[in-house]
Length: 318
Image 1: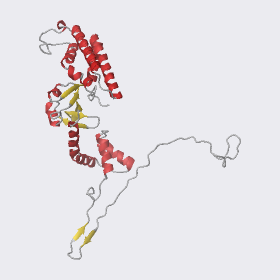
Image 2: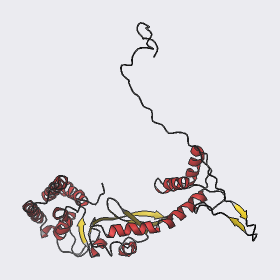
Image 3: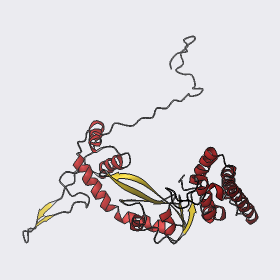
Image 4: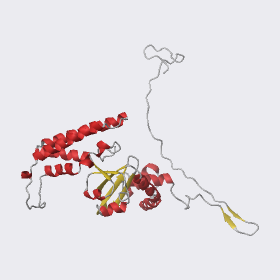
């Protein structure tokens, strides 16, 4: 700024009063860096032996891609699920690098082998944790149905793909069979067969309670949903404020749980669930009664978060 915009006075020698700042964030152009390693070759004048210096352990080819390029390719493929061909196009268009699909596949294979020790460390961390989260979800492997089994904490996660969903796959994963802490899960039956403490995901139960309330207009489901939320609020406050659980408060909340269950039994008497042969078995029940029975049978697992602040309310990682 040289002159005043109003009168034209020269401002070159006028003291700066203040600054108005504006910032532009950008990234520099990507430039390929080539590092050449040279190994000295010498012939011994005494015996005539040809001696050659060693290259760094990671440099094992006349021409190869460095770890940053390889890691980026693996990251694009396995985290963002970008197809091999498009990854090749990305490197060519943005970085001027011609990397083939075969190179990326080989990098994945090498990474898989190198991660074996790391995977064992993750398993040990999970086995020593007081609480882990367990879940499974469907996935495709070469077009065929598989299951991705997950065991995790807030810091460590183990993924394990297997053609089966049940105990055969869980055993092969090698965590729950040896785990002695608290396993938080959605109540899927095979989990219950393992010799550890269990806690049910109350977020799953609340969704089902909402469905029963809306579809069947049952008051107990509404009351139980609200009670679980109140319990969560209480335990969250204890954690945030660093307080211990109040035994009397916990006892009062548990008593209210029993009261709501009793109300649910009144709303779902045996007359609504007759014993007769049907498509679903000898004792077909309404969805409301099935959910209520889970609250009766699994009370300890549902309320474990109320007795132990290390146990979360739900199975969802934050």
